[in-house]
Amino acid sequence: MPSAESPKLSRRTWITTTSGVIAAGLVKTQADAIQLIAQEAPTDPTKVPGRLVSEIGSRAPSEQPKRLIRAPALSSSSRTPLADLMGTITPADLHFERHHAGIPDIRFEDHELLVHGMVERPMVFRMSELMRYPQVSRIRFLECSGNGGGVYNRERMPTEVTVQALDGLLSTSEWTGVAVSTILREVGVRPGASWVLAEGGDSAVMSRSVPLDKVMKDSILAYGQNGERIRPEQGYPLRLFNPGYEGNTSVKWLRRIEVTDQPTHTRDETSKYTDPLGDGTVRQFSLVMDAKSVITFPSYPYVLPDKGWWEIRGLAWSGRGRVTRVEVSTDGGRNWSDAALEGPILEKSTVRFRHLFDWNGRDTVILSRATDETGYVQPTVEQLWEARGTRTSYHQNHQRAWKIARTGEVTFGLGDLV
Amino acid sequence: MSQWSNRGADVAKLSVVSLVAVTLMVACGDTSETFSSGQVTSAEIAMPGTAFGLPANAPDRFDFGAEASEQRVAMWDIDVRPDGVGLPEGNGSVQEGREIYNVHCVACHGLTGTEGPNDRLVDSEQWENVPTTRTVGNYWPYATTLYDYIRKAMPQLTPGILTVDEVYAVIAYVLWMNEIVPEDAVMDAETLPAVVMPARDKFVIDDRVGGAGIVR
Image (cartoon, rainbow over all chains, first blue to last red; front, side, top):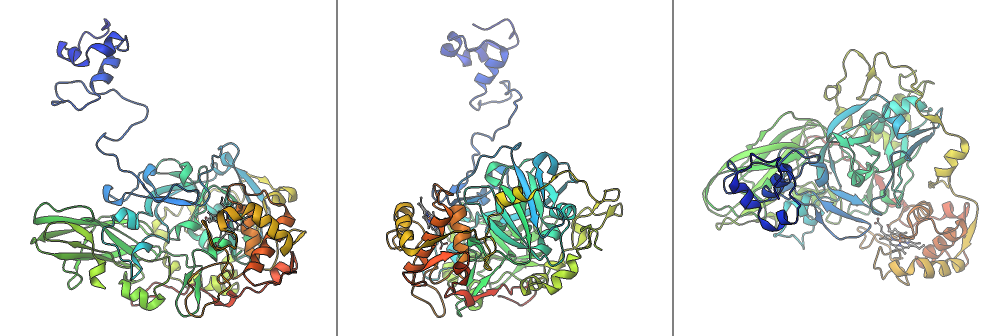
């Protein structure tokens, strides 16, 4: 029965909360009652009290973006729902995943980072010690270099593919931690050193070699992501973060850094993450992610219900610095106009671009292309094929196209252009 | 003496004389990064070669961590380099490796290393311009990588289960299946780095540099 604590609830409210639950004695307080009635959206929310505060928020019931899972295996990935997102920051629970042996459960108190090799003082750091060092935060993208590989094969160019399935191995976060340079200063790098080996504490013991210059310049030992502790899928409690580099080098669950005078040539920098160029050579240590852009709206499977004004929206980024320009074509690449870029434009971060488009209701193809501060322009797929041959599996940063049919249906459109 | 290395290791200078790879990286347009993105202000110690400064009153050393003893380093220092550094003492033959493989690897990599369901490990067919498969036999540049990887990551569900001798043995067997070593081969810290992999000379360092009009 209703308790005396709830005199202000209207009779109508009480009727809505009805029988069974009340009879079962589950509604004891006003809070219980409010929780109960607020479960479904009322026809008029001004006539029903809202829900109470909560310790952890949740998304609106009708807004449930999800990562796309390729295969539930130990070595697998999940992709960020780019078409569902706005701005540039990826909610941490939607950040893409790529693990090679699953997600380890590591206790913060137990985790240690060993830094050794060509250093004056080999040292081991507990997490609480690392967190005491001067802290840095940077907003940076992370992209797997395998992103977009699905649209490089001349024979198998898909049309019914979402931007999530295609390019969802891309996310952007504010990463917080201690600069690698601060820790290397602490251990004292010895003369002759030129690389570091970064090693993870997962059961793949993921290992990558990274040039010493790079980690000195702007890499972070990250323990924070978008204001909270980094999530287990992202390397809790500690990951290396190499801005602008292919995602695999940002080793998660980082437990060891060895300063060396040569790369280690681990499996994931020889067998994988290398690029056979078609001329008998294989490109190795292709670490920087070149400039790229993707239109996230409109994209498959969206159907434009009407001709008229639409805003084309997307993301652009470059591993070499800032994006300086994004152009959009609404006629299959014949004419290009500058898209508006939403500031602040940060280096090695995604930038949101927008372009207003008055669709005349006829078949057309829309594309985007990014330029970065080095002057590099996002190439066409033909340019990449010409430069690298058709058999590489990484760094496919070529222009993406979407075909808008008369019916308003949007499909991946590059197939028609090649 | 550089700011970030207390005993005078001037890495900024050293990188120029180190590996060609590093020199290329430096020339890769990466240097276009400016200090302006960081929050470096005059109140900070600017360190050469890094976008991150330290507060002006930062000590030479914070000394928050603990010095790592040799034993502590040895516990985790398990990587293996092409020059053989990191390889433990021990050995294993092709014959012994066959047994290990058929117990611990066959379920995921197939009887002859070609059947899957997981990564194909064998293809002794070499290639001229483009590889059709990328396996140990026709794509891996260094045999030592097998030790580094198998010790760390394989068998996938029970990594670390193999002894030193067993790892050497299964490597010998995988190399033999790929027609790289003879049937009487024994792998150890001397012989493994000496194996010349067919694809070794195919690998070249990244030459992408950014910039206008360049697609690589």
